[in-house]
Length: 239
Image (tube, rainbow, N blue to C red; front, side, top):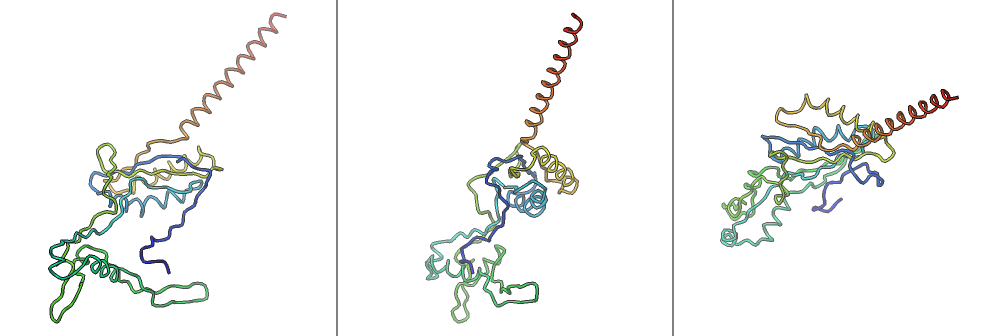
């Protein structure tokens, strides 16, 4: 079992040779908070981008995950004869996934957990810290729990609206122009199904410069070919 404070394991496809994003996208909304926008992208958009052929990952920059913030009142904590460590201990005791056993079959195995995790601010506020006779001391008696975010020091915006920025990384062996075309096709398929307040913008696409370079090379080859033909004809005509 992992330690209680360990982050959930994440499986990512990675290519060490691909250090720069193939494309930069931004997801914005005039109505949603950054927490809601992050959750919406993780649930609805990111899986489709990362399942695109040639894409290794769609990494979020500026993400804000949901978090419960607890604001302790030191005077109330002292009045109820608690210490900070005791409050933290009670919170940890009621925010765990203790395993109860396993369910096994011929092809699979499932771990059975008893969920002690609290998911809302009201649930945290009702948490019992101590019980004496008929009196219960709850978290709301010494603190206030509020729904918030894990990160509050930064707040990314795009064109005046809350935004998250997405770096789409591709395989180093994949054709970036073809991968870009597939991503654009996925986005065009997604847009009609997005919530009306959610917009996806393409900020930068490396394939644009590759296409421009190919176009310039093609023009140079065409000009060189025409020049050779013209010189050859002039030479033949002078004979």
